[in-house]
Length: 77
Image 1 (cartoon, rainbow, N blue to C red):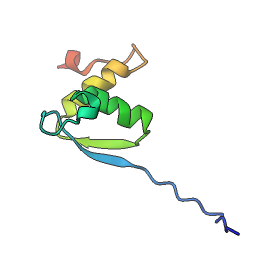
Image 2 (cartoon, rainbow, N blue to C red):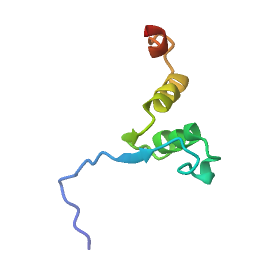
Image 3 (cartoon, one colour):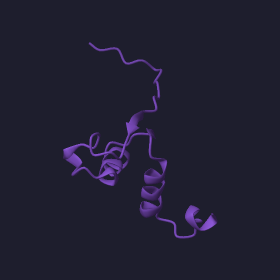
Image 4 (cartoon, rainbow, N blue to C red):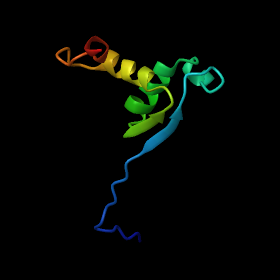
């Protein structure tokens, strides 16, 4: 018989390090960093990630954002 604890630990998962160079992109994602972001963020449900290319992640977030009312960072500069 298994004992189930009344205490549940909630763990946030942050993956690292996402990069854009072909040397580090996986063939499973057609060497496309945006496909890789899509898989890890939406399919696997990670809570956060580290990247050496924050601009690519930011652009992915803008493209996949459901709200059109948000300010575009490129327009603010």
